[in-house]
Length: 165
Figure 1: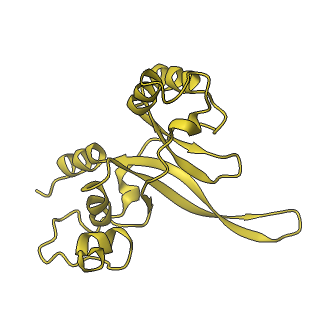
Figure 2: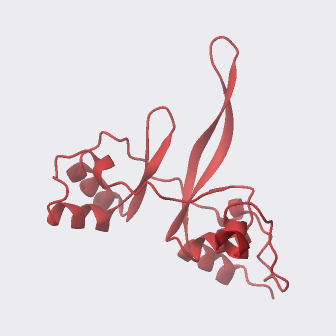
């Protein structure tokens, strides 16, 4: 079962890590990846507009985030196109109809080792940063802001460019 799987336990934050012979990059923080700011889509964007935006900006995927800041999921160009072509969605439908709502989040201060464990099963991880916001009454609340999207290519690029001499 999952609770005896160390990689699942690390991915979900129940274990820090148990790898005995860690690579040099294992404990480096995710923020060192220098990810570019993500393209964010609001839930009311149509599938057609999402396709146009992703193609125009040269992205394969983008987080879908409500105006409140709630992360709804991830939309990918291939899933959007295949859903529309298969008749499961219309070009005019909101992008939420083709949004993946199963995704992993990781913090800027989490380790590349944890990211590596996530990327063994997932194609990406949404990198979030917690931010304290205050309303007009001085009441604070913690919000998660999307900082970027990390992929295996991001990790591989970092490791290859910064390899230990």
